Structure formats: structure tokens, C-alpha cells
Length: 174
Figure 1 (tube, rainbow, N blue to C red):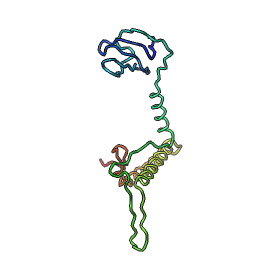
Figure 2 (spheres, rainbow, N blue to C red):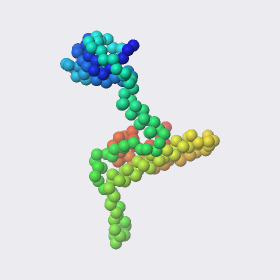
Figure 3 (cartoon, helix red, strand yellow):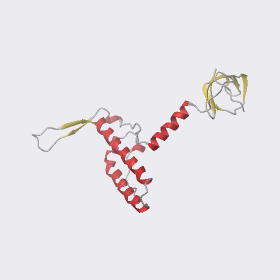
């Protein structure tokens, strides 16, 4: 099957007349006169009105970017952007000592949250390094149990996370 290039004009039997504006490994992105932007499979049923034959890169920038992000997330300690809960944005944590002659300390909650996320990311990297190490299986299990307990200790801070799936979780009860 010969791929059509960007700028090719087609007539789709459901969407009408359109122009191909992007090509991925599986789809044409077509802007249709009456239906706007639609993605259609490369092997969809349509009539070619005017084909542009270009060298078409069948991997889109989006697909390359997504693959690269996934690789970086898996193999580096670069952290993803984790949003703080909306109600905490711009807030502050105030630490007040029992001794009233001592000064209290204010910390922007965004800074505090960022540090918690960095701790979590570093624990994850440590977990990956343990799992890929040459330690025997029993040592790996023992260290993994410590890591699970660390996560459990950090669940107090889950209230700060905007997205539940990004929260800490310790050992699950059965």
C-alpha cells in the first residue's frame, strides 16, 4: 500500500471532502470541510481526488516524544510532573515550637510537596536498582519489605496529591 502524503485531497464516504494534514504509522489525520479534524485508518475506504506522493515519515513526532518520555521515566531518575491538590496551591506550612520564645518557621507548601515527590522518586530508583541487582532473592524480598514500609510511612502526605494514582501506598491488607 502506497501512503498518501500531507496535502493529499480525498473524499471519504462518511465524512466527505478533506485534506490529509498528518500521517502516523496507523492513521491519516484529515481535515474535512464539513466535519473538521478526524483520524482515519490508513486502509480506510475513501477516494483519492488528488494524491501527493511525498516521502512520508510514518512515525509522528507525538509517537517519538511519547516513546522517549516512557524510556526516560523507566531508566532515569528524572521525575514526572506531579500536581499538588488545588486546595493546597500557594499555601504554607507553619512549624511552631513549644517554646514560645523561639521563632516559628514557614515553608511554602509547594516547596514541601516538591521535596516529598523527590523522596518518592528516589525511593523508586532505589527499588529498581535493588530489583536489578545481584543480591539473592531473599535479600531482595527483605529490602522490598523495607521500601513498602517506607511508602506506608509516607501515606500521611497523600492528602497533598491531586491525583489519587500518584499517592503513596504501603502494604495492602488482605
